[in-house]
Amino acid sequence: MRQAPSQQPPDNQLLFLPSVFNETLSLLFDAHHYFQSRGAEEQSTISPAQRLFYSAEMSRVTMRLTSVMAWIMVRRAVHAGRVEEDKANADYRLDGQEVYAVENPEMLAEMPYYLSYLSDRSTNLYERVMRLDKLAQETRH
Image 1 (cartoon, helix red, strand yellow):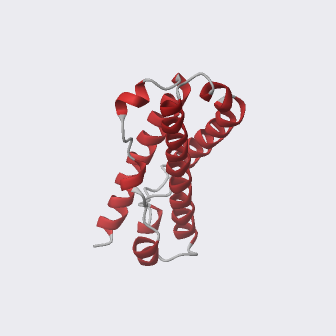
Image 2 (cartoon, helix red, strand yellow):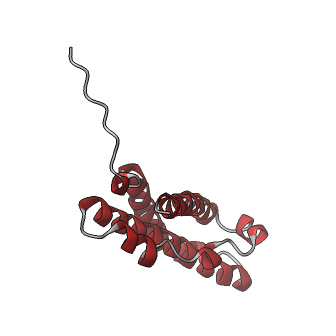
């Protein structure tokens, strides 16, 4: 049996990760389904102050996931040769770190379980992709 030659991926393929895409897409679908099917019902069971936090956290979950998906699409464009790596690193970095952090972890702990679950998962995914974004930037310098 012949051994397949060992191949090093080109620099522009370093961050093309289908598993991150699939995880992000799955989380987007989960969040959409949850917010559409149970969001209003669960908001009706919490206090007005908690509803405000719930809405803000729902927005943060959505923004984290859409920012990650946009970043992945840029990485795919780099992988396909449609966007140059330097252009991606200069103009299409992952954004919003100051907005996406949970502002009040104690309040999040009081939220309905699935909102907390989506917040934790989207935060973990966002932080992993933020490290990949930094890695992409560092490998170009």
